[in-house]
View (cartoon, rainbow, N blue to C red):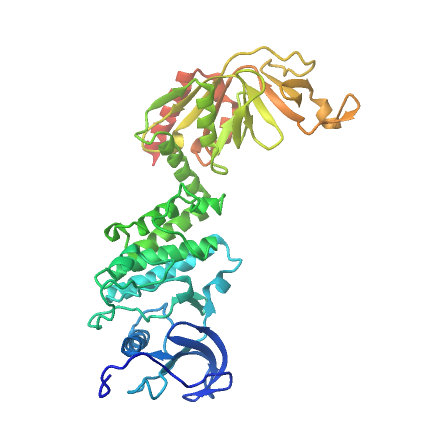
Length: 488
């Protein structure tokens, strides 16, 4: 320090307790403390209650960081940082206590408690934009973590700039010393913080902070994010479309800093992901395309077929892997959403599930996928059935001889459907396994995306796909897709 030379670390010996006065501010209660400082709620005549930060353990480095923090929060014209209200920066910090005051803000966890997922993410768009503005000024925070994110006036803000880096600032980080928060620190900040790019490290830390905020897992996770592991956001929110967020987390936590997006890109991509989740039409068409890409990762064919029953079940379970993604059209007319597929008790038969306690039973012959180019909403799956004999249950067969309405009283054993309505069989209550089933003797099902044009036209519920051959139906959809492309 000027006129003092270097001094070893000393702890300010002024005792602080509720009611103590510091620079005209009266301490009310302790809000938090760390290795070098304490934060109190404080009051002063003519001022709103503030948070006052006191530097309690002082050496040359800690005081210079204290000064750097005040410099940034008092001079940086960026929304989204907690601003300075008052300060005391003595020439001799060992003789007189350094401090500064800021508005009282709300802890991140308290602010987002019980807040819907997408609303939490929306607040991080603002954080990313603030970080982008800081980075445009060549300012890196370098200590982004949940504890340093506070809410003020309804928006999230950065606080605690003690490790900040900005142009012409003296480098206070010793060689081989890590910098940042344990659970959100970028790997390069552990290895060589003094040379690392603080902006790229900030994006890494912001992404991990967002993951903690969304999952509530305060200790975060090690290494790079993976959507195929227990880290997946889908593990916490089953009904949310997560692909865009998954990809963002993967890229932001890449071990190679050069491959991470910028703070500006972080915000724009997070915004796009939220918008897709709020727009079911866009979400559904996006997920329908992603489904096809997951089934054909090396390239989408114009047509593909499966005849093995295990493969048919596996592909159809992919079709219904996301909630409300598909719409299934019956060979007898009408439609429903497929939620699951399993093998039936009858040999070589499968069960299509539309709710927990019922099933559509059939013998599959072939599952076919048909693709029509750039617009994936026209792409569909067609399940052709083998012709089978009726079960022999009296009164079960419909007038066309294509479907039976039955009750499965035990695995693979069928009785008249009316027992389900009366909730009894042979004078006894129905067993837990009992369920109503439709048993299809012939025909074909087709599966489109829920928001496909085909599903949005009510006349398609007339089972027209079952009144055409496989080739005729493909040609029919091909013509419709081409006409739609011309119309737009």
